[in-house]
Length: 104
Image 1 (cartoon, rainbow, N blue to C red):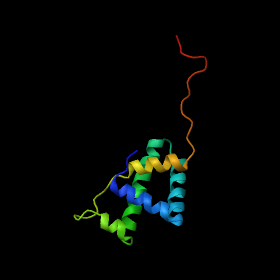
Image 2 (image 1 turned 90 degrees about the horizontal axis):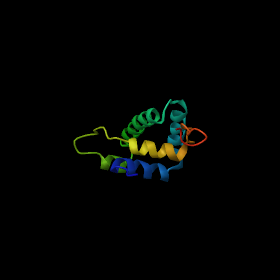
Image 3 (image 1 turned 30 degrees about the vertical axis):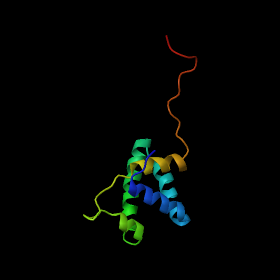
């Protein structure tokens, strides 16, 4: 898994700040529990992480310094969203193979 620069900054920040990590972890678990699919949850979490990144960039220098000079263009946080969902949620049961091996 590869994170873009903004995702990495956010991930490192959350890892260093336990209260922020707990906030994001609660958000991940809540969104995951309420979503019908992992894809839907990742999409919602992508939007939440971007909103959080924008909010933090007004007060945290490392976020502000990483912003493009042309202003805060929307940056994908999907890889980070998927990574955090794998870390902080229980895997949802998928379709299992039928018992008895391959069908004829």
